[in-house]
Amino acid sequence: MDRASRVLAEGLPEGMPNTYAALAAHGDQYLYPYEENALVEFLLHQSTLGRPVRMKHIASLAFSATRHRPPADRPLKPPGVNCAKGLERRRPEL
View 1 (cartoon, rainbow, N blue to C red):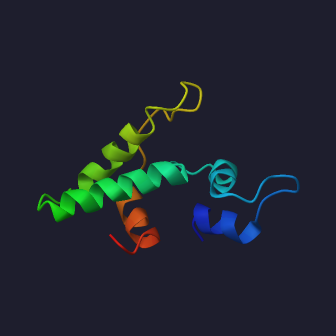
View 2: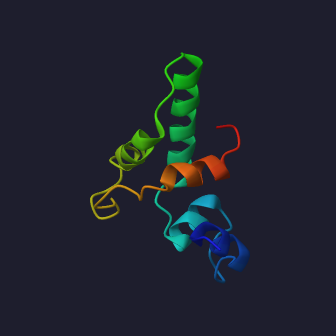
């Protein structure tokens, strides 16, 4: 079972709000939900313009989406090579 599925199955500790942001923070996921939504919207927009993004570039786009975070919360390196496949599984509209 992948990390995101495990966090959803286990749930949140007592006292934490039941929100997607809390799940992402608790599960140590790479992108927060609003960052993932922005990335998906960008990918869909590029596709409608006739310029689909190659899968090998999605990791660097995800890394760029985290640049607005405070320096303490920013990841130090891009996500793994399988992040594009994971995004595709989580978001069927892609």
